[in-house]
Image (cartoon, rainbow, N blue to C red):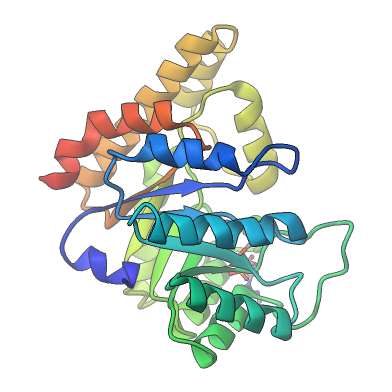
Length: 287
Ligand code: FAD
């Protein structure tokens, strides 16, 4: 099923998982997926390490298992920056054979150890290519605070419009910790004529290191309320985890009240946290 269809009937809940690290067995992800059953997600997406070959087959294998073994719609992430057209054609054929109908088409982050291939400079190039070479539902990434390489929010929305016009059917945002960024972004997108569903990406924070890494990677801003919480609980892992869950629930409650199209939960492969959040918001999603 094309995941963009689901938004017509409800507030969508989707989950994101990542393939196990190189040193871990692939079975660890199946334990995670077993434990995510019961959350009744509308779809589960699987990340893909740009430039790394080991995770690439893992993304396909896991997305296929989600669809064919667990009976949940799956989305395979596909960053194009380090791929050639032929490699993407092979991936599309493999997705089709596995019954994976939904692709999150990305540029990907530049791997400093690899020279980018020139076939897909921007995600919009990959979107057009997928559109021309298969019948997939195409999802794109977007950035409520602006992408960290883009000089202005106006340029970023302009570039997003190009990506949507190339054939993107729905969008998922990068994580953010202040909902006002999301509401302003949604307004800019609407003014720019971007009319596809936009899911809000929510990441529950479980430790200070995790968030410091995220801030350095994608430049999201941390509101004072959030920083105060982290400073108060940084040396108490259980309290930090519970405060992180409460913060994410608070964000989700506010987003649903403001009519968000869907919530995309970055699970960090942590079923305990996903369950706690689901328990707190499941009735709101259904209301
Ligand atoms: P693009 O849409 O190409 O945008 C990249 C930059 O180029 C932006 O600054 C944009 O404004 C600019 N731009 C776009 N088009 C043009 C144009 N025509 N002219 C000039 N400038 C332009 N990375 C992974 O490697 N693997 C994953 O699995 C993964 N999953 C993700 C999931 C989500 C929900 C999100 C939000 C991000 C994910 N990423 C992943 C990270 C993503 O690859 C990076 O954020 C990357 O830096 C940008 O990718 P993009 O697809 O948004 O790129």
